[in-house]
Image 1 (cartoon, rainbow, N blue to C red):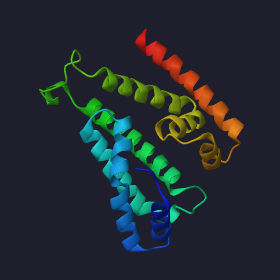
Image 2 (image 1 turned 90 degrees about the horizontal axis):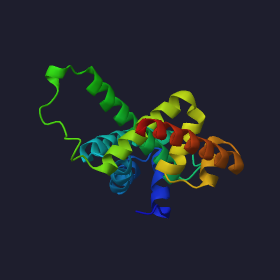
Image 3 (image 1 turned 120 degrees about the vertical axis):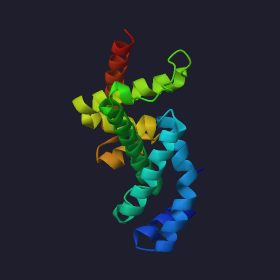
Image 4 (image 1 turned 180 degrees about the vertical axis):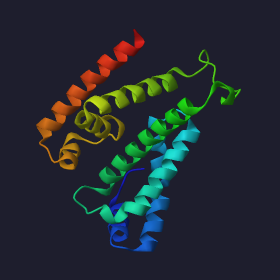
Length: 184
């Protein structure tokens, strides 16, 4: 779904306190939010959980949308952050379980999708990058997960377009090294 003037107007009205506009906005952005969460998380149930979290965050924080960027830019940052937080939460929950508590129907690695496995490796590498170089991780998330152009990234991070390009480039190099190490 392309974001259009109607959605931008709904977002502006909702940010101003219009509850009906917020309700309409959440209905309109729901499918796109789920789609974007699904691009980040390989399991549909996880993407649905992240989508619900993202919609809740939009509802809770819409008054923070001040129009400095487009609503789409603001939303995509919220969506990427919620999807990554869902992944971290799922990973933490899995680590807390003991062997006896693990479900019997674990996915068979021989039949797990290469795409799903690649996404998980990417999320792990991104988490590592965020620990080491948080500024680079943010630029990469905005570019490669949220699919923002460099001008939008620069505006969101309050940096120049050249700096945005440089940060994304360095983040990709870092990620590449991390992924190469994971595959070795």
